[in-house]
Image (cartoon, rainbow, N blue to C red; front, side, top):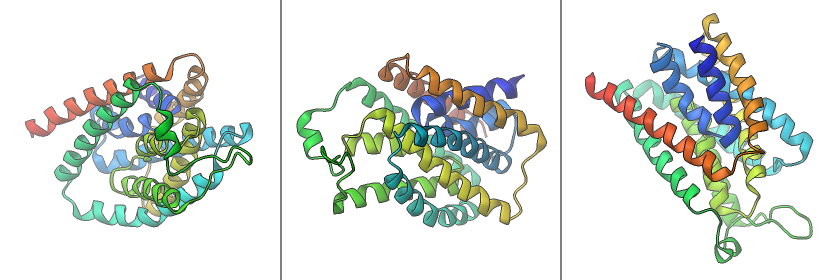
Length: 264
C-alpha cells in the first residue's frame, strides 16, 4: 500500500511542477520504502522517465512543448550524463547524500521565492535572453539563449547521472526566469527534457548491468497514474499555491534526510 501511495504522490508532484516529483522520488524510495541509494536511483529514474514521457507526448499533441528547445537541452544533458555516472562511482555515498540534501534546501527556497513573486516585471521580460517572436511565435535563438538553455540541459544531465533525478527542478525555474514562455508550456517542455535525459541515463545504466527489482513495479505504474492526475489537477489550482506545497514538501524531506545523516 505504501508503494502505491508514494508512487502516486511522486507522479502528482511531477505533473504539477514539471520537476518536483523527480527530486523527492529518491528520498521517498530510500526513507519510505527501504531501498538503498544504489537500488533507489534506477527505480526513481525509470519512474520519472516513463511518467515524463507520457506527459511529453500529450504536450506535443497539444502543441505546447517547445520541442526545439527541449531537444537542444536534452542533447547537452545526454553529453553530461556519463560524467554524472562517473562521478557517482568516486564520490562517497555520504557526500553525495549531503550534496543532495543541500540541493533540496536550495530548490525549496528558490521555489518558495518564485511563488511569492506572482508575476514577472515587464522590464525583466524584455531583457530576458530567450524571447518569443511575436510574429512567428518561435524563440529568438540568440547566443545568450543558447548559453542559458545549454546550461540548464547540462545541469539536468549531470544531476540525472549523479543523483538519479530528472533535473526538471532546475529547468522550470531557469526557463521561467530567462524567457517569456508561458508557464504551462515551460512545464511541458521541461517534462520532455526530463523524459529524454532520464531515458538516456537508464539506457547507459542498463548497459552497465542495472537491475530493477520487481517489487518496484507498483511504484513505477502509480507514478504514471499520478502524473496523469497531476496534469489534470494543474488546471484547477493556482500555480503559486502548488509551488509552495512542493517547496514545503522538499523542505520537510531535506530536514528528515539531514536528521538521518546526523544520526549516522
